[in-house]
Each structure stands twice: as structure tokens, then as C-alpha cells.
Amino acid sequence: MKKTLLYTITGIIPPAMTLLLLPVYLHYLSTSDYVVLALTNSFIAVFSIFFNLKTDQAYRTLYFHETADKKKQQQLFQTLFSFHWMALIFWLLVFYLIGNWVFHWLFLNNFPFFPNAWILLATFLVSNLCNLYYIHLQNTGEVKSYSLYVTLTTFAVHGIQLLVIFVLQLDFFWFLLSALLVNVMAFLAMYFQNRLLFVFSFSKPLFAEALKFSLPFIPFLILFNIESQLDRFFMERYVSVDELAGYAVLISITAAVLTFFNSVDNAIRPELYRDLSAESSGTVASVREKFELYLMIGLLAFSFLLVFGTHIHWFLHHEKYNNIQQYFPWITIAFFPVIGIRFWALQLVFDKQVGEINKFLMGKIIFLTLLFLGLIPIYKTYGAITAIGFSNMVNAFVF
Image (cartoon, rainbow, N blue to C red; front, side, top):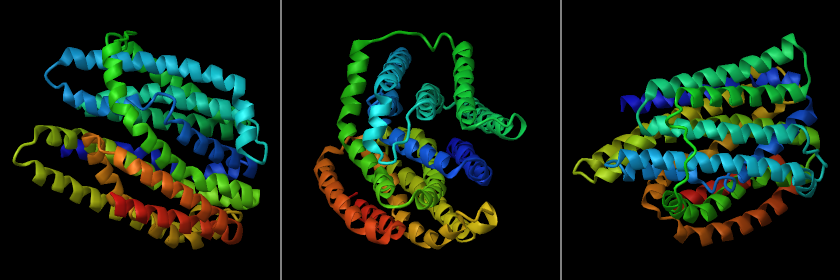
């Protein structure tokens, strides 16, 4: 439990820094810059399902299925590392060729893909190489190394971006490029300190084993991520750029809480999976203890969202965004069922029991699409929040 708390505390740092510096970035970025940033991140959230076939998630679980074979654990990491490298090169080339066409097809406002969205995509791909190593550190219980890398990388990204804004006074391109450069430097530091681990070696049987685990989850993740990002694509079609920017800020603050849950998931997962794989007499009690911790953290997180959001004008000091405070009580209610959903999903992933709900999710997305089409043109932001709340309540019921 001590390691779980340390992982959780470390995981709080990235979303906390993003939230803390949000007023600075909002004053620096134009409305159109922030909309491009928000919509590109929404696109990347859906794209993240495909780019590596979710083999990183397979590593989170399969590692604990091979506890008696250290050599196989290392070979699994090296195989997935090699695949991630190939995926990075492949996708950068693909989007270099078709990125503009994809964005013109997705967004009515004709946001250009180059150079800003391409840099955001490259940053995401490089950061996922780093993330694979973070998963390795969590799986092996190396708390100090994990905390050091995450903390230094987070402070370096925001520190250099602030330097770009206030000292060098460069434009949005350099603001984005600085994050890419920090992630490249972080990966190089990991690589040169762990050359024996970062070996380009590809085992077809191990890769097939990883795919056997991860591929059944892809339909579920596709549906889940489409469901969670669909609101932004409809809002972009039916509201003004200014209202869309306000909605993006509202969602980004809420997303900071949800990103915090990602950190809690990653912190709890190693010990939870050890308990589930052990199947001892104390497994139920240990899982219940972790759920109680998860519930307590969730209640604190959403209480913070409610209090912080309803007093957002004290924090932002930005006339374009101060009116979003009216939405926070409703968006807190809409996302509250996420506490139970996330914890149940951790156990679902371990047990590989997702196929039975994919058909239901497909039907629900079709229904939500109709709901968005009916509510957003009329009720705008309130319509989107209502649909999200309905989605999460149905998710809680299904899980």
C-alpha cells in the first residue's frame, strides 16, 4: 500500500501542474490556438487506441503472468519497445502524407494539421516510448526511479514552455515544439541509462501473445474513447468558436481530475494484479481495501472539482471563461459514476471479460449520437453535459 500511495502522489503532479498553469496558458494562447490544441488532443485520444494496438496495456498485465520467468519478462519489454519504435516511424510518415486531409474531413472550421497538430502527434508518440518504460518501473516496483523521471519531465516541459512564453516571447509553434524536445531528451536519458533493457529485439511468439491479450480490448476501447470524445466533435459543429473554447476549458479542468484517476489506476494496478493472480484467502479483503482507498480518493477529487469549478473566476481571471462556473455542479454530477466504473474496469481488464459488452456499447454510441444531435444544437453546453451524464450512469449500470 505504501508503494501505491507513492505512485498516486507522483501521478498527481502532471495534472496538477497543467491545472495550476492553465490561467497562464489561457492568457498566452489565442482562442483559436486553444481550440486547435483541445480538438487535436481529442483526436489523439481516439488515435491512441490504434497506434500501438494497445500492446502497452498488455505489458501491464502479462508481466504478472510471467513472474517465474525474468528472462521472458525482459524479452516481452524489448519486443514491445521495438514495436513501439516501428509504430512511431510508421504513423509519423502516414500523417505527414494525409494529416491535412484527415483534419479537413473531421473539422468544419478547416483547422490546419501542419505544423502544430503534427508536433502534438509527434510529442504523443515519443511520450509513449517513455510511458512504456514508466510501466516497466511500476511493474518492477522501482518507485524512486519512476517518481524521479515523471517529476523531472513534467517540470521540464512546463518550465521550458514558460521560458518560451515570457522570456523568449516566441509563438505557439515553439510553445508546442518545446514539449516535444523535452520528451525526446527524457527518452534519450532513459535509453542511455538502461542500454541493456532498451535492446531492439523482436520475438514473434511474445508479440503474438501480447496481441492475443490486447486485440480483444480494442473494440471496447474504440467504443469507449469515441463515446468520451464525441461531444467535442459535435460541439465544434454547432457552437461558436468562443463557446467551444469555453467548453474546452471546462472539459480540460474536468479531464485533469480524470487524468488523476489514470494515475491512481496505474498506482493501484500492480498490487491489485498481484493480489488477483495470487488467488489467496486474503484476496477479497485486499481488493476491498483498495476499493475503499479508490472511493475515498474519488470523493476527494470530485469534491475538489465542485469547489474549484464554482469559484473558477478567482483562478482564471479571464472574462472569456469566467461564465463556465455555472456548469461545474452539473458536470461533477455527470462524471461522478466514473469512480466505480474505473475500479471495476481494472478487474475487467485482468479477467479479459469485455467482449460481452461491446455490442451494448455500439448501440449506446448510436443512441448518444442521436442525443447529441438533438440536445447540442438547442441546449449547447448543457446538452453535451446531459448526454455525458446519461452515458456514465448507463456505464455504471452495465459494469
